[in-house]
Image (tube, rainbow, N blue to C red; front, side, top):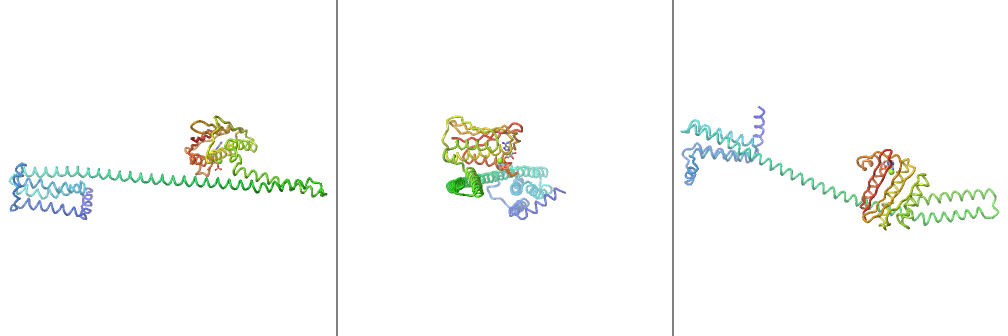
Length: 372
Ligand SMILES: Nc1ncnc2c1ncn2[C@@H]1O[C@H](COP(=O)(O)OP(=O)(O)OP(=O)(O)O)[C@@H](O)[C@H]1O
Ligand SMILES: [Mg+2]
């Protein structure tokens, strides 16, 4: 039942294709010729038939193979089977009731039916395989296109990130310089004036003198705060003296405020780095030291800078409590922890790499490599 339904669904679909009607026409024509005794063949055919060892009706049975194979090619094995059934029905009456040699005729009919089906099914599976290969090729091409699009998007994103980072650094530098050149200078002048007023002998009452001293103290505190802010935005040492003095300043700053003994060790001969590379290495070390301070519980940390022929390497080591590393560092960003991911991005933007090693109870080592 299921096979019959399957076949009839195929048949209904086939009605809509012109190839189906053409095959039907060919079948009808061959049947007509097969049963018509008055039709005669063109003169070149009878000798051809006898050279193949076939009489006229056997030759016609062979002709039935053509629509069967063709149907297999167009409609798959179902088409071939239905067409061969139709061919069988066309051939059987002659073989059974008209043929002078019914046994031979029946044998030929069965042979045509079987050969037709085998050839048609082989064609159908060949076609299927070709279609499969084509689909495979198309999906491979699509995958390649998607991969290319992705890599273009990634390149654009990286470029955008590079520009945004540069702009951010420029802006920090500008604000830091403005604070240093204008605000800090003005505060220094104000602080000196207040100091000289408070300490001068101008017949000030004790109360006013104390008030002036208090104002001087406040101005001095503001001055220190603005200096810190300016240094934080862009350490002056980085622009004036280069990476190593800036790292020294960072280490002493962390040690002073956190109590973590922090040292800088230099291995190899110092090499001058581009401004962009120096800033990237400084920012990575700054963020690593911020993590040591906030998360590690360490009492000592070390920044090692190594220069060799092929690269500059900075290693930040602490003896703190360490942590369980996720499989991929960028997974941390999903939980709003952007420090390590940002460090990795920074390193990649200047052509470098970042490695994080940590284990609970065993401290943390951050290594950034920058090829020369
Ligand atoms: N030196 C360290 N010692 C111990 N744990 C660390 C250290 N550095 C990082 N971690 C752990 O890794 C996590 C991720 O650090 P990351 O810098 O990416 O984010 P964060 O410091 O939590 O937040 P953010 O930097 O975005 O303010 C931290 O929350 C902390 O648990
Ligand atoms: Mg952090």
